[in-house]
Image 1 (cartoon, rainbow, N blue to C red):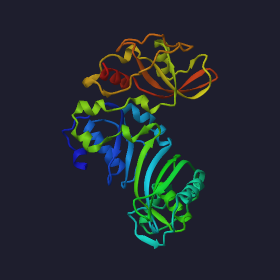
Image 2 (tube, one colour):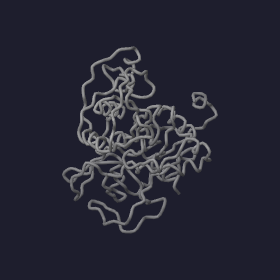
Image 3 (cartoon, rainbow, N blue to C red):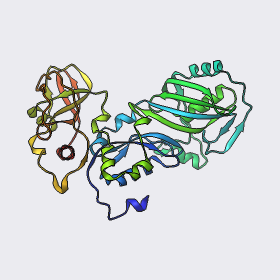
Image 4 (cartoon, one colour):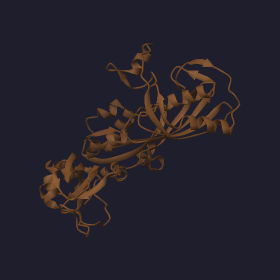
Amino acid sequence: MRKLESDPKILRRPVHGVLLLDKPLDLSSNNALQKCKWLLRAEKAGHTGTLDPLATGVLPLCFGAATKFSQLQLDADKTYEATLRLGVKTATGDAEGAVIEERPVPELTPARLAEIAKQFTGSIRQVPPMHSALKKDGKALYEYARAGEEVERKPRNVVVRELKLAGGSAANEITLIANVSKGTYIRTLGEDIGEALGCGAHLTSLRRISTGHFDIAQCVTLPALEAMNEEERLAGLKPVDSLLPDHTRVTLDADNAARFLSGLRRRGDWPDNDRVAVYGPAPADVLAPSPAGGGLGWGLADLPPSQPSPGGGRSEEQPPRGRGHLCLLGTAHIKGGELIPGRLLSPPEISQILESNL
């Protein structure tokens, strides 16, 4: 991987969009990101929250302008599938750790599993595992664990929105499907379920099947991505605004769009709203060709006709591609009739996105 990253022959370029990767087993999230960044020859990239090397599944990777909105996926609810081995506790809560305790497994019935699932559904308190990236005094907990130290961790409130438990392929296994809030540790949930059953448990497999509105069916595997040509890889990117599904769309006219992009607040008859995605025609000064052939990716609005927005809204007709075509300008919030800029795309980013879609 380091050899690929340091290859002086790789010509980087601006790439904008979201790649939904089905992260393979035994690959860290950062190594997966760097591999995909190399395959796309992208200048800028970031992921939206780590998956353990032993976990697989949905890993949204953000490129270019999309990195400005990656925090939204960090905060999103996530759904996991896991297998628990009952009767065996390990030092790490998963199959990597040394066995520290073994106990007999009681007889399990569907009614008993349903009872346990109900017990762990809703708002619960978790003690973060020592083998985690959570920091204490500026140092990751796993660093203390590797040094043989155990430090005090305060319980945290998390929410298990839905939990399903069922018998596994062996008598000492159960499968778990959980939809959880940010900060929930599935290893800890598995260990706590094992304790509630009276026998202890550890995870033998973990797969993330959704994060926010992205699910595993939308993802591409790394071998499939490697087999694609460059055009196919770029075509597989989701648009930048795919990260903003829960944002209310406000569309500005050309004059207000230009002022908004410069960081100025706009006034209009809008209700208060904490999450707004702002669109408008790209100002004329960003439509000139950018140097070195511009960038690649997706970010144009694919909006249905809507009523004109007050304070400089859109018309009923879709503008033509290129000059005047609606594009994402950034995020904002509305308070007291003011549209207050949040994270904004830069003129070069808008220009590169427009060029790539012409």
